[in-house]
Image (cartoon, rainbow, N blue to C red; front, side, top):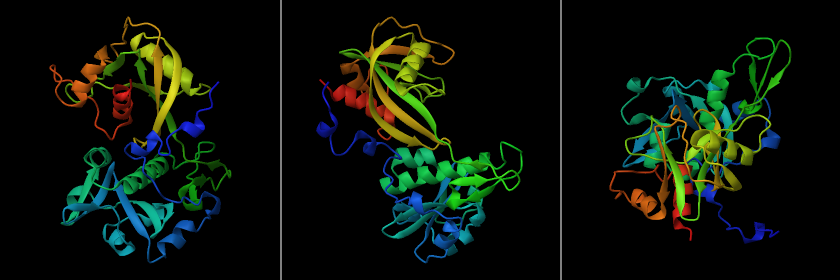
Length: 313
């Protein structure tokens, strides 16, 4: 068996997906219960403010700035008691906090823009977009896990937002990440794409589904592909991953070797599923498919899977 690690590129494919550019030093081994308080007291602290699936962005000329100083965050009525410490970079601490103002109450020069649009439109740099994914996922977890699952008592935030502890039964609860397999089934010259009813008009994409407890990534790829399309897979190969803050998932991108080509799609999950030749995929990527078919934008891991396959021999 060939050992491929030392032949792999220095920049792994995950660095080229949206939300994948996080450069924060999380300092996971040095978090204390007063970590966020101490970070907020640092004059160099920068805060990202989020509310209802949107991030507050300041318009700075033609560019957007996702960071506020403490005074600016307080002016936005940020919930500093619910803030989480993301870590530090070369410029100081980075903190995420729930925003207090509704989007229509924001002052001139500040916009509340949804995470997907920020990602697809490239409104902030990759490092800030990665920090957004980290902060959004943490804040969403705290919002949905405020009470102890053992006794029902409201729990308390600890170690900068990376743990909740119950004051009644002392149970500890830690942020979760939901693993999702996203996969492209392929033959030598065709790939399988499906269309969900909620997709944009004309869009086809890779298949995807949650990885279940006690399941390997490879078996989840095989199971989900068969359940959605009737295609059985042989070999499965990992390609890249993508943090996905909707609300706190990790997309795990893989390729699967198709063992049959007769599709038996689950039409309760999909409204269309079919094979595409490499020429058809290029036409979709370049926006010239005769049927108006398109694929997800470059920032999506599905687009990276599709494009990487199309560029292969």
